[in-house]
Image (spheres, rainbow, N blue to C red):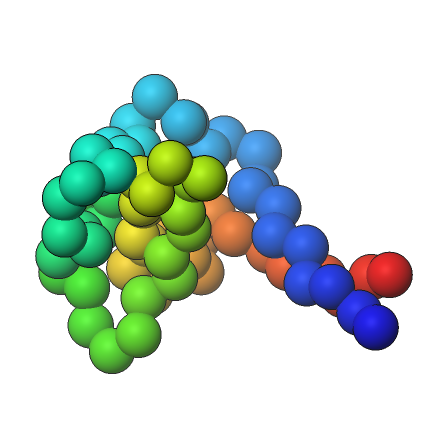
Length: 69
């Protein structure tokens, strides 16, 4: 079985990320640039239910992925 690993590129600033509250609806704007979310955005959740969502532009600019064991 393989797992997808997400990595954030150098220069990504976690201080600019806005997490939703655990009891709030999913974000409707990008959690990094506040741009519009179109289609199916990349969404990441913490165990407590808080969520961040990335628009296509931020996903392309800041996130890389790889497949590993």
